[in-house]
Image (cartoon, rainbow, N blue to C red; front, side):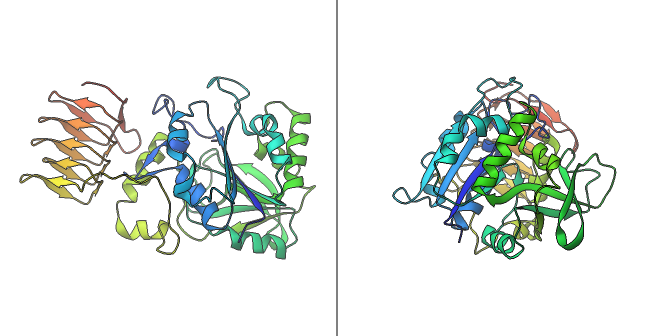
Amino acid sequence: MLRNTLGIVNIEGNNVHFGDVMKHRGVQAFGFLGRYRLIDFALSNMSNSGITEFQVYMPAEMRSTIQHVGTGKHYNINSKRGTLRLLNSATDPNSVYRHDINAFTENIHYIENSTKDYVLVAPSYFIYSQDFSKVMDDHIATDADITVLYKNVSDAKENFIGCQTLKFGEDRRVVAFEENHGKYKNRPVSLEAYIMKRTTFIDLIKRANKVSSLYWLKDILRDTVDQYKIMGYAHRDYVACINTTASYFNTQIELIDQDTRKLLFKHDWPIHTQTSDSSPCLYGPLAEVKRSLISNGANINGQVENSVIDRDVIIEEGVVIKNSLILNGVTIKSGANIENAIIDKATKIIHPIDIKGSETSPSYLKPHQII
């Protein structure tokens, strides 16, 4: 158990590109599978591993993250023995200083004043279930300065673009960090989750500031890879990187399949989230639902196929929805035909309309729109 470890949820990196899609909220707060937010996975992995002290570094668009994370009680963070701090740095979304080293520097006193010997740093845009106590055991057994979690993937040409890949020497020692440009199919991809001594982490922050005011943590790790003993620990189960609109869309469509979901969700490793007291979904007499995930509070009277329907969504008779993500509070009236689309929260589609995108470029409707 990692009771002597400070858990840090990092901000999204410079390889995360969503453009105008859901720009009103940070990636941490993106809805997922009609029930979760992306940050739930990082916080649950840390909490389940025994961490009791947390720091969540937030983006400029922090409101949704604050509302969802709250006091952290739903992540089993004990209010008497545990602490949770929601921290921010650059509040301007266009600031050139919107990177993690700057965020750590502006809040360095919280890191220096921690009584924990180790830190675990992980972002929220990688989705997986991992017992980090096993990573810590390996970290200690190998006498590593830094241990990085990675995944051997076979789809690096299409996914994980812009992520770091690892080059290994002997005995899993990392000798180089490289950027994935989609040139090779099979690559060991860094999940940007690092375990190290808290003093080592502080040293890296100070080193990065001496090199460049625009450095990221992964930049200074790349530069100093020969100065630390950096070891890799392989994650063996399901991993998704949510760093583009296409990956956000396709990952959820992929996880509609129950066998695939079982690779991510383990019965002995719960992913905690904020609960809702919505009533069960209501299906009308003409509802036709195939291979979809339907959340509580939804009211379905139309056709839904291979889609994720969030809470409190109303789908009237005569609506056809295929391969789409419908976020919470959306109303879709008769005559709408939606395929390969993301409909953001509280949007009302009240006129007959065809909305069709593609798997690589899904259509997107902003929140609170009337169409």
